[in-house]
Amino acid sequence: MNHWLEFFVHWASSLGLNYGFLLDAYPRSTLAQGALTTLWLCLLTIIGSLLTGLGLAALLTSGKRALAVPARVFIEVTRNTPTLVQLYCAFLVLNMLLNQAVGTANPLTPFAWVVIVISLHKGAFHAEALRAGIEAVPAVTLEAARSLAFSNRQLLWNVQLPLALRFALPSLINNLIDLVKMTAVASAIAVGDITYSAIMIWTQSDNVLELMILLLGFYGLLSFIVNCVGRYLEARLRMPGYGH
Amino acid sequence: MPSIESVVEPLVSLRDVHLAFAGNPVLKGINLDVYPGQAVSIIGPSGSGKSTILRCITGLLQPQRGQIRVADTRVDALTREAQRIELRKRVGFVFQQYNLFPHLSVLQNLMIAPRKVLGRNRIDAEKDARALLAKVRMEHKADAYPGQLSGGQQQRVAIARALTMRPQLILFDEVTSALDPETVGEVLTVIRELTQEGMTCVLVTHEMRFAEEISDVVYFTENGVIVEHGSAEQIFEHPANERTREFLRHALGAPARRGPIVSDPYLLTNLSRYSLSV
Ligand SMILES: Nc1ncnc2c1ncn2[C@@H]1O[C@H](COP(=O)(O)OP(=O)(O)O)[C@@H](O)[C@H]1O
Ligand SMILES: [Mg+2]
Image (cartoon, rainbow over all chains, first blue to last red; front, side, top):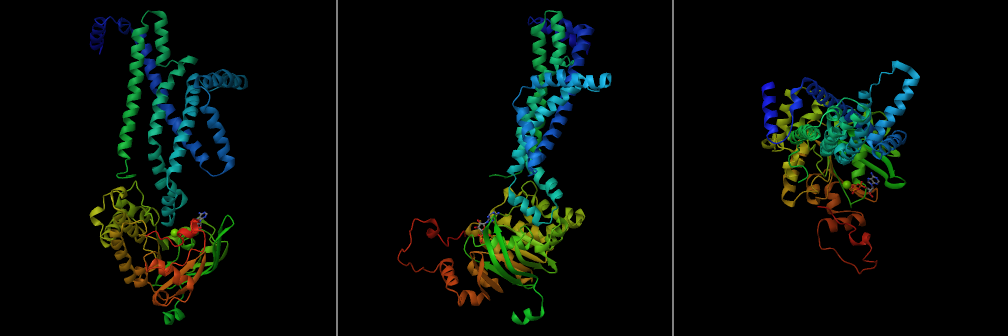
């Protein structure tokens, strides 16, 4: 491992890039820790945002105004304000109020706030994608299921959701790729994700360019992985001949 | 049939059924009887309420007035989902647009309802599904997806799918209207075989020759009322009502007598009053 690292540092120096700091234990472990934190953020917000999206889409398509209207208001407010501002609002205002109310018993760490804010924010986008998918399921297909004696529940799980998910999948993957990049806002409230770690290192030494390249490469790789998973799912869920 | 009718209870009976969509009356007092083993056809112009009648029979729509009975179930009085499910286990429905599940293979389309709804095990359900596919001559397409089949093939699969529930009664709603003329025959052949086996069928159709051939009773509807009903011979050979005669003249393709244009020819309703979708 270290051998490869030395080789890389040596090779990079021949290109005029100084990655010598990677050989120091402290910055290296800071970066590794940051990368791990970003991975956790991605994983939790992917799950959280999809659950939020599913819940909101269920409210939107429930056909009950009392449920659909609040969901719609939440989505519009969330979609139309910047994530960074939402995060500041949540962390600086809500968190402070929470602190005042319960003091040190406040269970919400900055990390938790990032997970919540991004999950809700991206959940709003997922909800719109899923709603489009649900509405794209032909009414006659549902009628066919009903006339085969499906219960509403069986109809939802065996026909409506499988089809809606297929229609929504490209948009959902698009949202998730955006979500990966969005986790960088965590650095704004000093959650030690990879962006924050990089900032910490470059304020102490002169290696902004080298860290930038690392950061871009890292986020690029994560997005690429999400993209590949999306492609795989699309291929798996393909409906041969549909729409031709 | 009258001799049978006097001793056997009808499997389906509609009495004075009224239904309106948002105040727009669509069924205005429908009376209809289907006896076990009969093939009953409903013919009539587009928009006359034929599909609505079929939807009422299987509880997809609820009439505002009147009685609908299927065997001993009062369909118009069903209130709970579980009751509708029990009804629909016994009544098959085949649609104009096939409405197969596009994300499932042909075999899965035939297995999903028996497995999920009737709780049958995989092996039995598959055996049944394959046998029914053979019956509609689609066994070679068991692993294909609906999107990969022609219209006629999809419709035969849809008929087999309805049969997997072993219904007492099958409703066919213009099942050949979306098909190419060449493939209409293959679907009609399947339906003909079913009626010959004694399956009780209600068909909404624009295939007049076919209706004449296979029907025990034919109902002619217009504007939400049954204008006339009787045996196939009676309706097709000796229609009593002028409306029926006029409709059949157009539908059977006989050279229509064109009277002088009395009404505005640009009015859409006059343009294609009896335009048929076959
Ligand atoms: N869900 C619905 N909502 C409102 N109007 C409907 C609906 N379904 C059918 N109708 C109307 O009811 C009339 C009869 O429709 P339908 O039963 O489909 O006729 P047919 O099958 O004889 O062509 C038509 O005028 C149609 O526009
Ligand atoms: Mg119709």
